Image (cartoon, rainbow, N blue to C red):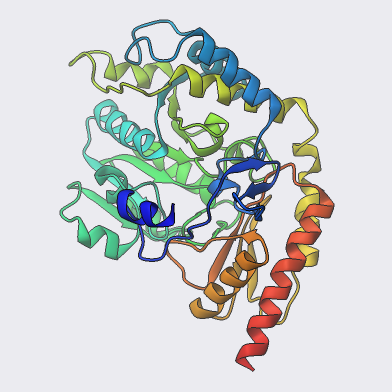
Length: 396
C-alpha cells in the first residue's frame, strides 16, 4: 500500500507523514495492524468533534439514501443546503445571512475576492504578512509565503501584503482598496493573536474608505477559539465571512457569507457571475448541519475553558519557548526547526499526531478535538513532554 501511495497519488512533500489509516473513532486514528494515534490536530481543524460522531454518520446515511448530486449549485432547491444556510443565517444575523456554498476554503476565498471587486468597482486587494488563505492563484495573491508566491508569479495584479498587527500600516487601506482579507488568529504564521483593538481598527479603516472586510474564519470557526465564531466575542461585523474545514462535519465544504445587497452582484451583469458544480453538495451540507447541532446541543463550548487551562498548565518545560494561541488552537514554540521536527517524529512514534506550520519552522500545531476529555488531554500533554525531554537530552 505504501508503494502504491507514493507512486499513484500526487505527493505534496518529499516526506509525507505516511500513517496507514484504516478507521477512526473519537480522538483516534487506527492502522490496519492495531496501531493507534491521537489526532491532536483534528485533521487540521476539520474534525472539531473528533471521528465517528453518530449524529453525523446518521445524517450522511440518510442523505445518501435520498439523493447525492441532482443539479449544479444554485438551481435546484435542495433541503440540506437551504436548512444549513438558514441555520447559519439565524446564528450570524442579516449582515451574513446570504450563504454561497463551495467545495473548499480556497474556493470561498476566490469567490469573496471576486465579490469584493465587483461590489466596490475597485481592483486592489490587501492581505497580511504571516497569513495563509489557500493555494489557488487568487488566494495565494493575498497570502504570505514568498517561496510559494515566487514559484507561481505573476499573481493577481494590484494585490499586496501589509504587516499584521501594525496600526500604522492600515494607512495602506485606501479608496482604491476593494477588499481586505484577514484572519482573527493567523494559523499558518504560528497562531499569532493580534493585540486588543487591532481587528476593530482594521474594520474601522475599511468602513472609512469603503473597502470590504473579509474575515477568514476557516480555522477559527465552529468553536475552535472557545466561541462559536471568533468575531462574535470581538465586536466585529465583517462584510464577508469565510468558512470551511469543520463547516462540513468531516466532508469537504466551504462558504462565503455576506448580506443580500453584496451577494446580489454575482446574479447578473453577467448572470452566473460565480459558478460551482459540487459546492454545497447535499451530503456535505447534511453532515455539516448535523455537526453544528451537536456542537450547539452538547456542553462542548462550555467545557473549552477547562481544556484550555489544562493544556497551558501541563505544557511547562524549559525547552518550550511559548505556547501561543487561544481556545484549542495553539502553536507550541520550540528552540529551532530541527528540535521541533524531532519532537514531532518522537510524538508520532508514541502515538500522537502533530504537525508544523507553513511560515515558521520551530512550532508544532496543537488543535485537538474540542470534546477531548481532560484525561485524554493530560495524556497527550505527557507524550509531548516526554518527546521534548528526550530531544533536549539528546542535544545536551
